[in-house]
Length: 209
Image 1 (cartoon, rainbow, N blue to C red):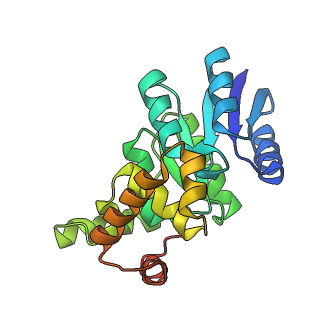
Image 2: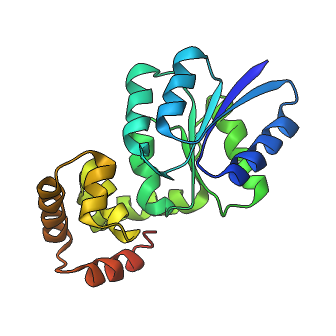
């Protein structure tokens, strides 16, 4: 019997993927976690054949969670499933240990293919992502300025784009307000923007959600 773990704060999303997995693998056991703490508790107690991980969840640093899985459970097969832009997020999570990245907007057949490939031990990269990688290789350098950000900076810029204030970001990441402010200044410097409006305009250029 296969054991799966779904990590997503939306009940509707978890229910839909659960039905899909049960249709593909009728003899299976599926656990559901709404945040990182619950997910870690499950992983410590169970051996999972497959994990499906969302990117944006309250009180959860999904990137740090992925790094935790890689460091402590290197054989864990993780597929990232997100509404966030693939060409911005996918490579980061794959480098952090994920075996694939699939958009929640992807057709059902493509989601099935991604799930089956990862469960069978193969990495999944969409045709769109292959094109992005090929284009980057042909240019000889990464032209996307968001890829110059560190993991923490990238997390903070995502939160800023989601409308969160420095104070709220500090609370959610357990950082000092001045520390978050310093990160924000470095982010603006690296991206060559001076305010949130310019940041949002730049994010739209690179389809960052």
